[in-house]
Image (cartoon, rainbow, N blue to C red; front, side, top):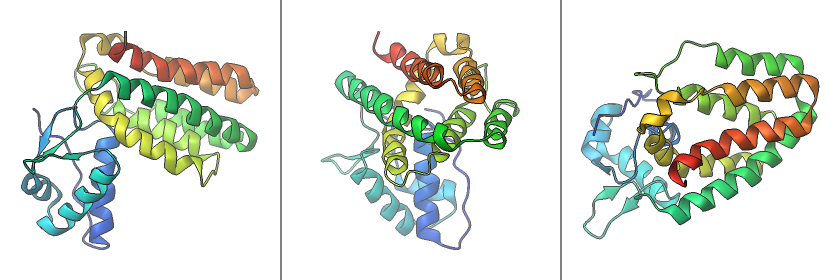
Length: 215
């Protein structure tokens, strides 16, 4: 297993920063299903003591991103087809609602910001999809909904989905994906106010990744 890149954190607001740094790593697909994690290794990467990492890990276990096994080993939940299908259904439902609310509020300047994400230099390697850009695009898009209910729920889904995202990009087929094809289609639909087309692009973007896991 390659060592995930987790940014070091500022010592101010230590406990919260440790949690958010780890949560961001999980959401972006830094860990794969079945990965076994060490508190010591995480603490070393973050440049902090074990205590705030232990507290953050407890929260991640409660949120379903990690499993505290009977042997006290911390593990990313193994792949489960039924769980993946549930995540797909939940993402389609909640993210479609967030898109609807975002389209009621979005303006041209907001859409320009989304487009800027697609034009950034890729952070990926070996031709794989850029997970950071993918996450930032969706997070910004749903943020325009300004929904205090939907946004935390979507973040919780992505926290659990991140490990499957890691699994998806490890497949040979991932290098053949035009990662921003549906993102560009979404932007075009947003600019012209084509609600049905925006929903179709979002649904296609979500479902194609799950097709790798659930053929």
